[in-house]
Length: 467
Image (cartoon, rainbow, N blue to C red; front, top):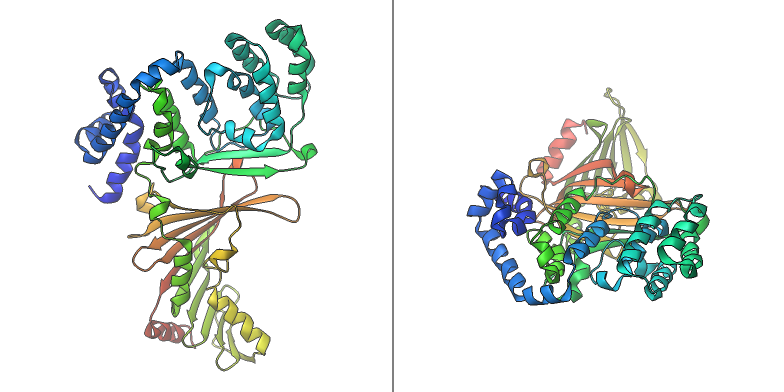
């Protein structure tokens, strides 16, 4: 089996490790996955590591959580919100159960990370912690909060709250329900990296978090009618499958390893990823390059560019014209499509300098001028080739994500995917995606292919183009 196919099979099999370790559950595993688990040495080693950790923590798990099934169910509801924007209205239904001492959650989840960044929700959570409520009362309040998170129906719940928690606490709980959104929205996603399971300090490497701040009166609630996004659903489904495993419910102390280690044992680590700076450096060292850029709507190139730093030559071909920039002679030659005629123009110093600047950047082959220009929220990760057939042969996939607020106040999310030649550190293909709403996923804007060429290949291209 080829390396990429084996990696893909291991990724698919990893969510069934707990089922495999329980003989009575093995028959529920898909037949092709059972066959893989019987023969894969890599999976055998990882399951042995998992079994060792479970054995070492078995006593702790049995003593510390008498209601592990409730706790795993709580985690399941938390992680069902992976990749979903969470505002105050979306988080409120989780607060009563989260404030239950018997259901303490000590690992990052889409809900707990919101509390870390939203003072209003944290205050509500602490208020609920201090109320003398039973486990059942908190559970029922969570269900009640979930049904009243939409504005306009608070008045219906006053008697229900009083019946559940007593009239002494009714006003406090009504205030929590009626509090408007703070303007802080968080989005928690799993990353394509795995921390060391034994070191909780490395947990942050396993997830990414986006924090958006808006004016409270402009925020729309995400609690109602929020579709589950397609992006990231593969990871979310795997996490939820593991949380529902019966064996997991007897091994709650291993949750940190399970959720932020085993899920990524086959994902390339950011520690082994090629630093973005090295890619910029490799691109700058190229002397001659051919670039082709297409849009999702057409396979025909929107633009072809030939760049020669050593000859100070630049050719840009698009639907409007084919233009040769001879920067060493300060001239530009223009050919209209379908004609043999050629127009020659002199270039001033400003035009020459502008074109040289674009040549250094290879006409936006890279998303920023240099690695130091990246926004603070940018995230650079090596990604698994989930569809090796669609990838460039022999390349490694990387992904850069970031977001920026536009002058209009709208936040623009960007994703730049790079299929990298590991031998040269040069991008062979890049894809640029953008989104104004993560719930709707990303939209592909353009695809760029790049290939270093020799001086001879460049000369042949110039001759073919009529120069």
